[in-house]
Length: 122
Image 1 (cartoon, rainbow, N blue to C red):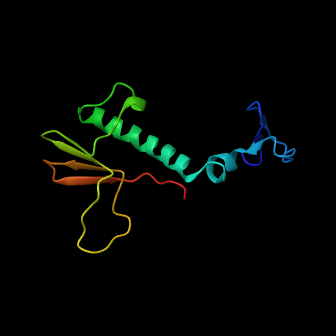
Image 2: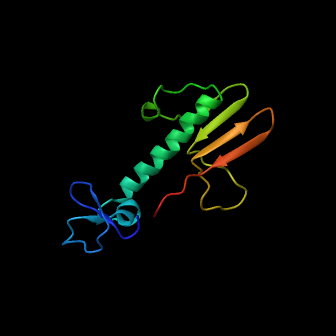
């Protein structure tokens, strides 16, 4: 909803007049709010990655919590067929600044690896 804001009662209002900051633009709240610290953005980012990790554990029949919000990803979890790495530093033969993807899925029999990196606002 571009240009609208949420008032203090979480009601949508399309009026562009912010009425002395009683409401906040939804795009501002979702992506640019200075009051939401980088710590909050990281927490939201990690929750999305945790849901993906939880789903992958279910897909490959690995140990997981019953609910996604109870799931605490381990650095490495594996079976005979698959290995899932969480926030694992990838060793490279040359310097790569961003070499810690959120999730790496190693399919052992296929000798394949899938790199999953969830973007977050900086």
